[in-house]
Length: 268
Image 1 (tube, rainbow, N blue to C red):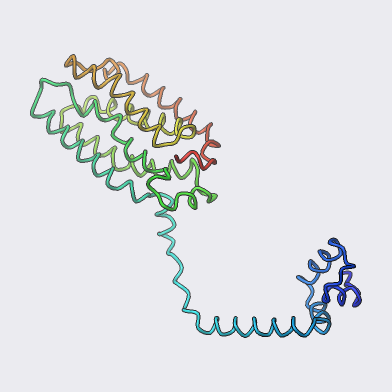
Image 2 (tube, one colour):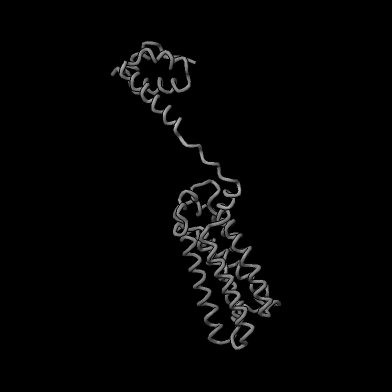
């Protein structure tokens, strides 16, 4: 290691104008890692600088003595919870389960309408997905979005939590409504709609994507089914292979667009 000459240290301590920026940077970089040269620098410092350093040191000592005890570090489960959950998801998931319960009850009480469970199943997870990754419902969204574990991986974790609640509710509501034989038609379209929202969310924001997918389903399937009192062909048993293929294709496309979720704008 090459140490600065004492003359250079003295000129640096005095702020001599003859030192260029490169020389100043070299001395400062060396002083950061060399205690011997810092000790050689002290005698060359002006008296007022030494007085200022002493005063700052005394203030720091007093501040450290009166500083409150550090807060306890967050528990590991707290960090895991932030990766998997968003506080705004809970009321929407509860509302979804309640809506499915009502739909199952209506299916049992009335046979004039097509199965509301089958009609609502594909869009049931979308409210929870819509708030799983959005700046509008998370006050710390910018901080979370900038962490290495964020992006598509975090959205998929939170989507898995939504599905872990909604899918059993769909299964129970389907069995209660007497559509157990068509349970795949209640689950596969739901997974396809979630995959579509995730795939589109990286471009226009997850919340907007969930709204677009939900409105498209209502216009294309729900309203025609209710108006004609017959389920759409999209919910006939023969459509199961098509839904399975669509779900796989949309999921693959969503994974291929993972980089879209590295932008802060993806949480609009």
